[in-house]
Image (cartoon, rainbow, N blue to C red):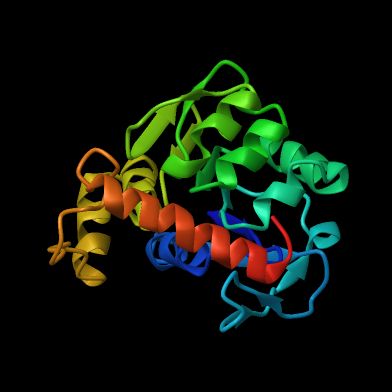
Length: 216
């Protein structure tokens, strides 16, 4: 079971590492982080980097494709070289998946046309402008395409995929092995639950981070 996770400048760390922690525990699974070069790739905060094990040119097939999100996805939606690679991977993969705004990349590649899909709540309009139908579900499974909502939902997506690939007992064992038993101290994990002031604070902080990096 070959799992491939593309990296790009300003990806969100948990989008990539969350699914990795789950899918790497599948029986006979191998996970490869890939990027344009083998140089280290910095996450969106600049405080963490990952070293890819292969380049896009090195990888021509996989069983599972996981496209993470992050501020860097905006520029990827017009990167025809990267989008072409995503299309080629999806054409041979058993499962094509995304986390957070990684779905924008899938949509830009034409893989979500007319499909229900999800993304980070703040990117809803952009996802729909790229041809998908936004769903507020945390994990959306449509055939062999699975999209997850914002950041932490990548763990849920990967566990759901583990159940589809290896069966519920294995998925439950993986969940226990990583002790994934969320008990958050606050109940503002979705727009439906959060106070309006919290939603606006998130938008303000995101705008500040984007402007500070000088890119979208």
